[in-house]
Length: 336
Length: 281
Image (cartoon, rainbow over all chains, first blue to last red; front, side):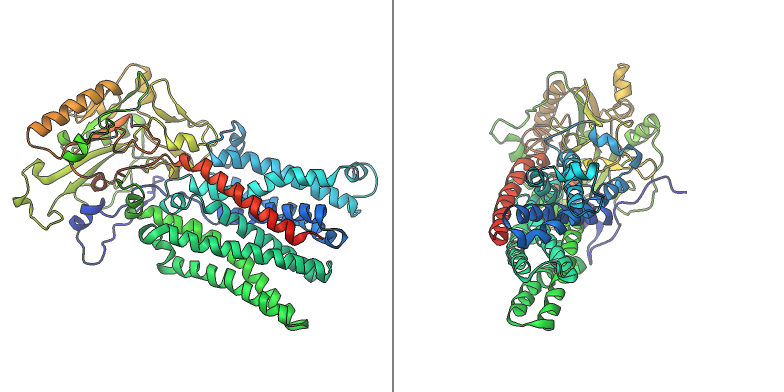
């Protein structure tokens, strides 16, 4: 009968070695730390939360500095931000061991705990995102003309957007800090890089999603789309540099999960298909016209979004793998 | 190891424990591997049995600390050393059979406590670290935040569990169940400062008797490093920490929070500027 106990390690011999061999440099190769239980719901939260925050910032900047041409970008950004933030708390609550106690997150605020900050940050941001989306809906006439719609149209949407941009960028980036503040070797070794990596990936994902939405619905002019693509290029270049930095900074032992097996393939897939290929496809599309250029851009966009989700999968699950590797833990904590 | 114990930056044999802190000294040179501590812990704390299997890892079928295992005895049979010398050629100390009863270290600055977003994990009046079961919502963030791999989520109730240093027994003036049951006093309970003095005397004795490998794990030089500032439950070991599955120089994970947020903020500024320049009219 199961007593709520799960074997957390495997009794698996390394090729040719005996238990005594393994007991010299580690304790039979068993994990020295416990990995988190985080699975697909957390990965999806990282992905959607990133898009939500970054598209809010893009919408705000488009509204403030983009002129009338970028009005559609601001509108789509606000709606996209709100739609992607709705599932965020649900995914987090679903992940809890005791979901009915989710509100215990709001008992205290702890500055040293990124998860505590994240709970409050998500709450604050979802209020901003909701308000901006409602204001946009009021301007678009989606919620009638009178009563609350009138009140919403009177809210200073640019000021709200500016104030909400702080929590927005926080939501996109804090997840990297959340991973960094653990004993998991791969994450804590790259503590300066994970936040910026998640942030740049979130920005490229959000811009790509907006580009695809606006191009598909023919809402924005070609100038607006060009500007979005320019921003996408910058974000992808930053992501590329950070990914290469992550691999180099991890070193041979701690970075092993990024090389070996299916996770290694996935990491190379993120680099090649999720970042480099879209950059090349976009460059190619700029020299073509018509349907071919459109197809290239569509393909690039789909690759960016797939790569963005896969990136978070790789970082989370490669972290699990490195937590299971006692040599990675000992490398991180060896006597210097 | 003798080098490690006698090294002179003044941090060996010192603990950052707060005045009056209570803790464990686990002296592995006295452990006989009877697992009375594991059993006593399970009995007192009413922890269910583990899904035992045969591991082949000496006499250890438990594996590690978990939600239902708060004391875990590690066994290391040294069949040969790194140079391939057989035990018959090695020093005849404890038959080259190492045993260690592992437990929550009740860190002076604890990663799990800092990470806990609900305030479920508290520091008690005995300076121990306890998870309040009526508060914990099973977010699981304390699990990877512990540099020693101590807390774990239970599959039965979804909450995080670990050693409480028998908080209920301490309240009634009793010593923890494992220390009470230990037949060789390998596990000793008391004020951390007294235990540390005793540990230093014991290590000196062991050195005098020829066991020059003996050292304290959990002072501010080994184990209680990187912002942890000492372990209220510490150990006397005779082999490198890694042999017992302990990290030599662990860090408090939360030391990374501020620099990581600063680098993320810098990236936010940079990317925000890039967005501004790309999007403006």
